Image 1 (cartoon, rainbow, N blue to C red):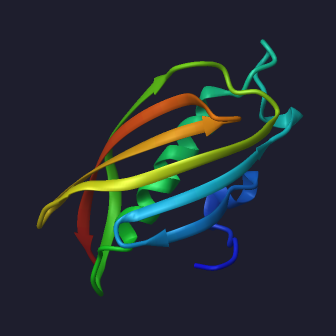
Image 2 (image 1 turned 90 degrees about the vertical axis):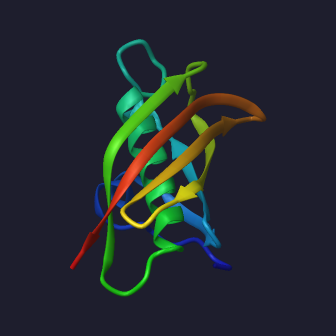
Length: 127
């Protein structure tokens, strides 16, 4: 992908933009704004979970065939430091692609610092 596109759904509504998705990987850009902060003034953990889930889902979709629909069946997010207002980059990648399950990882970075790391399993459903 050469230009940013909305991933659609909830992630699109909060402002996530897919910068690239190809060959088992995906990169999402996100501008953290005031409405994304928790009462402590840092990025809400639920926003981070949405972003990593979306990046990994986009990565899985680059490996699926017609009729295969990836669905998150497990998601673990490790929060490493608080996110602040400004640009985040989320990189998702497929680690292991199976016939029925796919395992992915994602990293969240802001200003060159790690914010979170995630691992997820996606079930591959048939339409």
